[in-house]
Every structure is written in C-alpha cells, then in structure tokens.
Image (cartoon, rainbow, N blue to C red):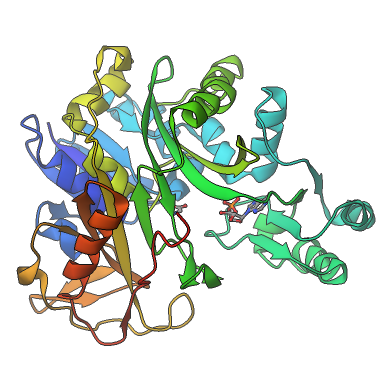
Length: 423
Ligand code: AMP
Ligand code: GLY
C-alpha cells in the first residue's frame, strides 16, 4: 500500500518510522514532513490544509490511505472533503470527520458532549461578549485559581489560569471583547479549577469498536519543576506509573466507554485517535480536554510501545474490524525528551546545524522542527527533536534518553533535565 501522512512534527516522524516497518507498505509519503521523514519517506511540499493539492498528490502518487497527524485539517474537514469527492471517497482517511473533530475545535461543544453523556469533568459555564457581565458574576462564585478557555483552536495557548479575580475579569474581557485569541475567543468557557496530577489516555476507534492504547504523561512547561511558559510538550513518559489497573478501570468505565458510546448516540462518525486529557482528583479521573488526534510528544512514546503492524491496525480502522485485532504492547517504559531552540516558546533562531545523530546508541531520534539545508540537518522550529528510549522503568528509560541527548548538539539547544520529577 502507498500511504500519505499529513503533518511535519515528531508525531508524524514517529508514525512514518512505525509504518515503515510494515511488510504491507510500498511507498510512504509525508506532507510536508521534516528532515527525519525525508530519510525514510518522500516529503511532499504541500500544506496540511491545502486539500486540492492533497487530492492531486493522492491521485498522482496512487495513495491508498491517508493518516492525518494534526488537528487543523480534521477540524477543517479533510475527511469530509475525501468522502464528498467522487475520486477520493474510496480512499480511507484515519482521523474523524469535521462534526466529531469539533470535540477539539470547540471547548463548549466538548463540554456539552460530556454533560450529555455523564462524563466527569470540571463544572463550567460559557460566555460571549453579550453575556460578559454574567461571566463576571460567575467568576465571583468560583474559588481561585480561575480557568478561562478560548472556545476555538488557539494553538495550545487558549487556556489561562489566573490567581486573582480582577485579573480573571480583565482577561475575560480581553478574550471576549478584545479578541485576544481572534475568533477562537468569541466564546469563552469558564471552568472550575481541578487540582491533581495529569495524564493522557489514547483510544483508537473505527466507529464501532475501539482499542485502548498506552497511557502517557507529558511535560508542558518550559522550565524545570513545571515552571515558566507552556510549550507544545518538553517530553513524555509511557506508561504513567500511577495509572494502575484500578484507576484504569475507572477511566474505562466512566470516560472511555461513555465517550465511544456517546459518539455513536450523537451520530458522530469517528475513525481515528481520541486523545483524552485527564486530571486525577481524589483518585477519580476528570476530563480536561478531548483532542481528535495523537499528542506530540506523547506519540513518540505511545507508538513505539505498540508491537502490532500499525498498517494492519489502520486497515482494521478503515474496515471497522478493529475487534479482530489483538493489540500487543511492549511492557517496558518508553520515555522521550524534547530538545528545543534557545528562546522557545518565545522568539528563537532557525537554520542552526544539528550534529551527533551518528553517535546515538539504543535510542531513537524523532525529528520535529528540522529541515535539510545543503545536505545538513538544521533547526526549523521551536521543538527540534525528541530522543526516545526504553527501560524497565521510567528512570532507566530516561537515563538512556538523556545519555543519548548529550550526544546531540546544536547552538542554543535546551532540554529539561528533570522529567519524571513528580512521579
Ligand atoms: P487544555 O488546552 O484544555 O488541555 O488546557 C491546557 C492545560 O491547562 C491543561 O493541560 C491543564 O494543565 C490546565 N487545565 C485545563 N483545564 C483545567 C482545569 N479545569 N483545572 C486545572 N487545570 C486545568
Ligand atoms: N502534547 C500535547 C498535545 O499534543 O496537545
């Protein structure tokens, strides 16, 4: 089979690396890809939201299946575009249709979905500029810290957590009236603050059946001890040590099952990954968000732990025969550490040469923001690359990730050295 992966990050390099191992694979394409995917697949210079160009590539390269990495094209309806096209409608797309992708595209929609299906989540109310005064009143009923969420996609920056009531009111006004996050903050969800430890659960569904994939925990803040600005993710660990059988059973019964059943009841066709962000509060899981894709860098630890032929698994998603797949997981722990450009998540330079790939031993480097320049690998983004390793526990795996990270070099490189500090 010829496969096209949409996206350009560590998640897409990991998917490409895994699919490359399938005996069923003929040609692999990534659009637009990075220097890592260029080494194992053919990169196509096409943006993930350029559906016409994607169509042309699918036809000319005889693509048999498309795997969508990021949320944007899903929320923009890339799957629907395929289904509505006479030529493309027979090509399976891994990733939900637009209606279900709204679970990530609108926080308000996701909250209503959770309410409707009795899925545990933080208490909330939604507001627009017309109901700003009511928003102030609602904030006054809550205890600090205050959680404000832009309803729409805001590249992971749309959530504000504020300690001070007046500051929360000012920010609410900035979001609703000042369009702080553009049209993404036309509606704002104000939520009860949940105090606990976070983890993520990944589910793959074909719309009828589902498989629970490994859990993962990512580290979002730039600074050690979870301080400083939020990033796309500075590293991840899978499985999450505190997600024991008892807790996973609760997640399954109270969250996963009602989510998959809810999609069916609401007539939201879904063939793809569901990424459920959870907080453990008093030993109970509460949902903080749905994403309609895999996480990054969570993919860099979740996918390597799946032993099955991933292409076979995706075929089962397309054919709605996921129940016939016997999912085999690597029992070991996988960790990944992300190296970023100096200055990230604020301003940083690009185009800096990266060296040391040849010295990597017993670990895998997944490229994120990299590109090729005169045959050299250079930085092309804030998050540059992730080093994944395995161990009997997260400490052993991290030791290997860090030992290998030390062999990689680029000017102003930075990575957190304290992953797992909270476990
Ligand atoms: P989200 O984009 O919804 O994942 O939110 C980004 C981050 O904000 C999450 O990873 C949490 O760390 C935090 N967060 C979101 N909602 C809440 C909440 N209700 N209580 C506490 N922290 C939250
Ligand atoms: N690592 C968080 C995300 O992919 O959204």
